[in-house]
Picture 1 (spheres, rainbow, N blue to C red):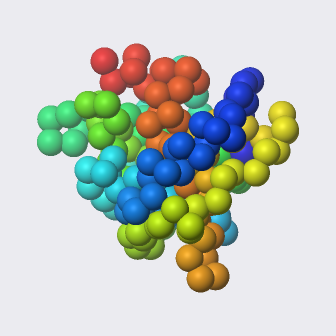
Picture 2 (picture 1 turned 90 degrees about the vertical axis):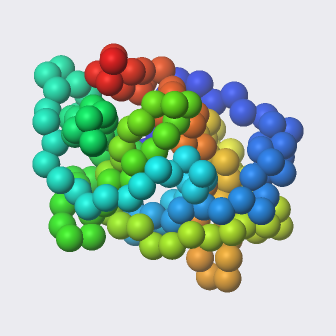
Length: 171
């Protein structure tokens, strides 16, 4: 699902992260049958999926680029990135336009559901999955009633070394 060679997060660092994000709002979106959440402050806008211009030699998860009001925006398909099977694009498929450190990029998700506010008590640390599963990009699991959100550190994910190609494409 999330592949990387290092998984060195300490539980002390996780606890601090959970404390920092408590009370924040998260945009909830789906990929397959799972629900994920990202910090709403990183979201610039939500758009319907539109055809992209492919970039030669880009990794599979980089669908291509779109021209968004004069800005060339790289588009990452999160279903491919997280190895969740073949993506299908329908009327519910959306692109979440993100502003990560002043760089604009988009991520394709199956659908967007709502915005949730999570208190510290609602956020559990990500379980340690060993080397089989990389939790570097996970903040934790947010639970509200019967719902569970997999909380993603979108800054860390989008600025990781394997996503460094986005910088080259967008430049």
